[in-house]
Image (cartoon, rainbow, N blue to C red):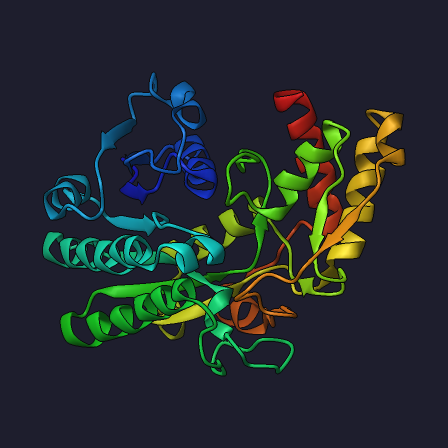
Length: 323
């Protein structure tokens, strides 16, 4: 029988994709989610699978964490309150979820004898470091409360590895996008937000002059990294962090041009939609580009989807599911 995996935040964008993937691989999957940012419709179709268990609970509640992690071999910890602007507006809740909740989950995993704890870290940890590409061992000072919370996760994971001998691996996600990413709400990520605006013939607003750049990373590359991190037998890969990215950067101006072109295939009117520029956003890193050499060397990471390939898949999914 395949092992049991707990996926926290399993009804969210990344979590629900992980749930689907590992169920297809015949693992037993437990999803823990409080539906604060996740959605029931992301996992509804999984509820009939006898290998899938949904626990509606909150990582801020230690009892919920203990229940969810029972008999789990692996934990893929995705639950968090994302978004730099949200953390600036409400640092207290971001800290409660991302730090206290993380510590609850990590401690519950240690107590339950979990083999390995793989967690979602963040490229925001690089902060004001101007060096490109971003290398795991060289970070700057955080630029937002969110960035602080994700760096604290890494510090806790390192201490737990050394003190309690639980295996941990952090995955610093770089601007993940793809199917099931929520286009709605005040803190929607840029790609689904722009897609929905284009589909509604509304002008997307780029923060600043559009020359800020990001290492946009398609969801299937992220799934690959989670699986490699969970199963790696390389001792050098344990108790460390890895960039989880494609290893290329794209400006917001380039991104919005590609999106408009891809969506115009479905609706020619979209090619006429104007693009608007607004002010820069507080807490944003100007440029982000990951070195993925460490992940390639220690985990055998080999990302299959470039930005263009990923956008084709994502745009098609949005058009078929949300139009």
